[in-house]
Length: 341
Ligand SMILES: O=C(O)CCC(=O)C(=O)O
Ligand SMILES: [Fe+2]
Image 1 (cartoon, helix red, strand yellow):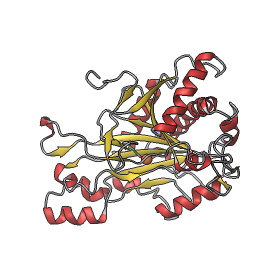
Image 2 (tube, rainbow, N blue to C red):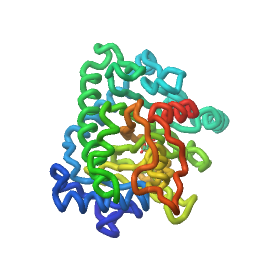
Image 3 (cartoon, protein in one colour):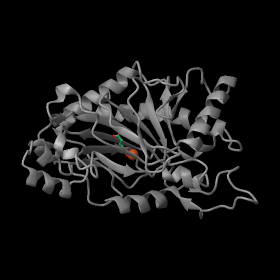
Image 4 (cartoon, rainbow, N blue to C red):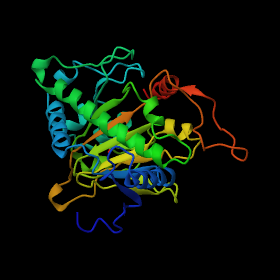
């Protein structure tokens, strides 16, 4: 993308970490990657990861399945509604989407939608089908979208492979953390694959400024791998200027990585879980008063529910007390999920 790369190693202040040559994580080059990745997590909380080894075709295919899923009639998607309980982060959520997709242009109606639905998005969540988690996937009957379940399941596994590489790189870069430390806390893949669709909507819908596609938030698990399409609109808080958000534009082939609140707590606040949000992308003359639709795919990585964490080695000492009690990953995530739904 010409013009975007002002500094070859960052975009909008977000470091680009090149995993080329990471190998099995034992080479000099792997240590270098680990060091710059650790610095990115400490100083920014976000990084673009390139050459991670995930085939671009797999990512493109996941986006194609996502588009097919969201194009299904609302009655079909509503066969698998997201349960009201925060613990069960599975199935379809279509908050406010029905109204928006019907192309409402009346101002009073738009205002009513804004009040009702702060975020104009629909989503589908799936996770590990393993028996150890008390949460079950909600799949459509296969005849409604043959192949969808199989592909989500296979993409979930591909992301898991990348997850291990990424966690190992971070451990390598952290001063007193053993290389396989994080891996040993992430054996069960208690992760969540979310397909997100921000429908096209009249540009007016986004004009008030206070509401958008996703309001400013931090993610609450260990970390997130985010795949975004070419639309744009993701913004990340500038670590040096609280309240100022900088665009994190899509870079073809890159995964956006961010630290979550759980890892921030685990690191005694050494690593940053940074606020981010999604706004309407800058309008183009060809948009005709409509904001383009956007698809994104976050993969939320969580530690094994029963694992108990306390401040990571090297993040506390005589001059730097531990700030948090020890907690299990399950208790932490449930506490946070219950506050969201
Ligand atoms: O859609 C995006 O780019 C970001 C999504 C996100 O931040 C989230 O789901 O937590
Ligand atoms: Fe997020």
